[in-house]
Amino acid sequence: MQPLTREDFNFLFHTYFEEVRRYVFYRSGNEEVATDIAQDTFLRLWEKREEIRLETVKGLLLKIASDRYITKYHKEKLAFNFFNTFVPREHAPTPEDQLNYEELKKAYEEALKSMPEKQRVVFLMNRIDELKYREIAEQLGLSVKAIEKRMSQALEHLKQQLKDQLTNIVLLILNSCFFRRLKH
Amino acid sequence: MKDNKEHIKLKAIDRQSQAFFAGGTFRWKKSEAEVLAELNRQLDRKAAGRSFRLSRRWVAVAASLLLIVGLGSLLRFYAISVDVSAGTHQLVDLPDGSTVELNAGSSLRYYPYWWSFKRIVTLDGEAFFEVQKGRSFVVRSLQGRTTVLGTSFNILARGSNYRVTCLSGRVGVRSRQRQKVVLMPGSQAVVQPDGKIEVRENIETYPEISWREHVFVFTETPIQEVFEEIERQYKVTIQSTIQAKILYTGNFTKEEDVENILEYVCPAVGLKYSRKSPTLYFITQANE
Image (cartoon, rainbow over all chains, first blue to last red; front, side, top):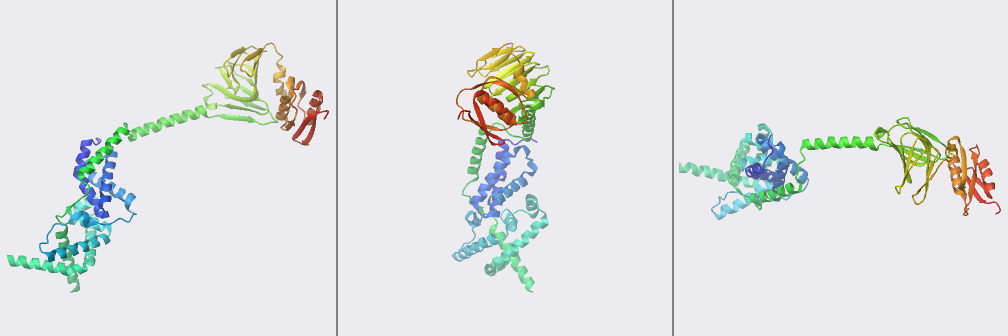
């Protein structure tokens, strides 16, 4: 096993830093913490450079990040500011839609905040990073079954939390279906 | 029907959240490039501060070295101390069969595991040595150092007194001021307060080692030293207010009762004693 060189290190950084930072962000909903932990994680990676296997480095990184996050921040009450950092794609042309959109965003922020961390990570990895269950399972070292379970729990949680928005959402979806059918 | 409604809601959430989150962007305040630059600075600092890396192998090597050094120093510095309190004598056997007879109120220290490399003992007090032939045998004291090959000799190292008497073989004596003499049998080295060594030849050696037989011989010895000797031999405290310089000449054999001795010593130099307790005596002028 060759120890990592600085080039290897830079390469691994470019490949995985964003994913590590997102992972901690999904867990904490706090940008400063996510950046801090991700940076720390790569420092640890360099310290362990003699024992790194490239095949398993992604899992290792997430594991380091998770451990660091738990020891450093887990007990603290962190400010949850998801949409300060994450900006959904703009898709609200009319002012009325804009209003709905702001309300929706607020509802999601609350729902994500109250969602258990384990479900939130899986849910966001699937929705934002668009990873398949199998991929999420691999990266987190869990079974696909466990991912499925967390995902459905997450959706159930959203359904409860977004009750007020739900009528709008259902209507919107029905509308779009209706219009799509008209077009054809 | 209700189940179906719930199912539709769930499906709606599923699709909506997919649409809502997909394709969004992260606006990080600290860019990836900034983090990398910071990391590289940190790593450079580390590399500069620590030019060697502690890999597991090196830790193991260092640990074994430490163990060896530790064991070595245990062998080297593990010491046995013999402290002889007042009122008794003690015979000590050294690892090579040499013997040391310690007078009351003396202490001896030696390194048993290092003995085969170096025969060295530390002495405070008085002792008679019978040393087996071999490599040099060193007796260290605060006041000086005596080196022999294989002989018998007596050392008195108390307070400012340092007196070595050679009974057989050759005995080398060195004062703290590094003056050296070699004694032949029947001669004695007395280290003066200034570090100079006075050699007395053809002396009568018996008084020097008579303590071994509990016989005490004093020749023009300051009376305070005589009382100190009595204190040591009998484990008593003798307080005296005598300032005058009184020299005592005489000898006595240790008897059961210290009062017999005081009875014998005091009148000879115009003093008297009074008993305060079985272990405490006051000495005053006889005519007071």
